[in-house]
Each structure stands twice: as C-alpha cells, then as structure tokens.
Image (cartoon, one colour):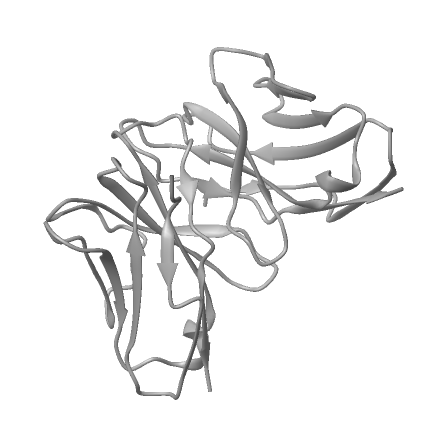
Length: 113
Length: 115
C-alpha cells in the first residue's frame, strides 16, 4: 500500500553543523507534506509544511525541499543546536479537506555539544 | 492559553478491561483527531471528529474501538475489552478549522499499557 518512509533511523551531528533528514513517499496524490518534531515523552510538534506545487520552503533555521520526480522530501536544519535533538517525522496528507496524515517511522537526531 | 489536554497521561489496564482516554482541544478548536503510536513507529490516523459528528473513522479498528466528541465536554476514545496489542501511545490533535495543510496541534498523549 501507500507509505511514507525514512532512509536513516539515527543521525548524529555536532552542534553548529547543518542537518539533513530525508524521507521517501509513494503517494503522488498527496497535497501537503509536513515535518513534525517529537521530543521524548511529548506529542509531535509541527515544524513546517510544503504544498505539492512547491519545491522549496524556508522557515526559521529550517528548509524543506520537495522533489516530486523521485518522490523525495528533506528537512534541512541550519546551525543545529542541542535543543534540536528529537525524533523527526515526515508526513503526507493524502486527503483534501482535513488532515488524515500518513506518518513515516521517524529519524532520531542526536546533537552533541 | 492551554494547549491540547489529554488525560490520563498513563493508564494501565488488564486484558478484558475498558480504557477511556479524554481529550480537550485547544480553545477555539472544534476539530479533533486521534492518532495511535506503537513503540518506535510513526503515528497512525484513527479518527477525525467535529462536534457531535464523526467525519472519518477509516483508521479505527472495526471492533472494540469507538470515539465521540459531544457538544459539551472532551472528546473520548474508548477501547473495550483491551488486549496487549492495544498498548500504545494515543495522541489527540486539534485544529481550528477543517484544513488539509497538515498543521495539527497535538497533546502530550495517553500511554496505555495492557497487562
């Protein structure tokens, strides 16, 4: 069936480095792609989204890239900080009108001081 | 400005018992979603509700699970006759309007353990 998945389960970086988290998706009909951050013991927190008619969107220290040709999504975090350590999930929204998100399994980002 | 409130945060049940999980959306939000997260997995959509209406329950197991969002009070996810496979974190999320950007506000979750 349709699914969203991640290439790397764990990413370890040094404080100050740039981080790139990747995601593959298979449902070409999805309208929105979203990144969430989940800290240990907490609920997911929205980071940034991108619509399917865009290929890049920037936020504060984060950039999301969408490559529809190869069905690939990435999250770039600039100047990674220890507070960025968390599990990052990509998600896609295949249904228009409301948010029945399909989440990937997540990538753990570990930031060393 | 309180966020999405879920309770209980932790719940332990024996097989065959009932579990009731409650969710109060953010103030001003009338759209509620329930997601389930198994250990080391991503979240899986269960049900989407508006006040007094179930809009989409395509992710809900056909038996033992039910959800409601009454006119007054919190949304309730009810699991009857729990089994060990129901052990998971259950997250509620809310939004102010019906929207498809995927920006949801999640609670801290209710962690169900079935013995």
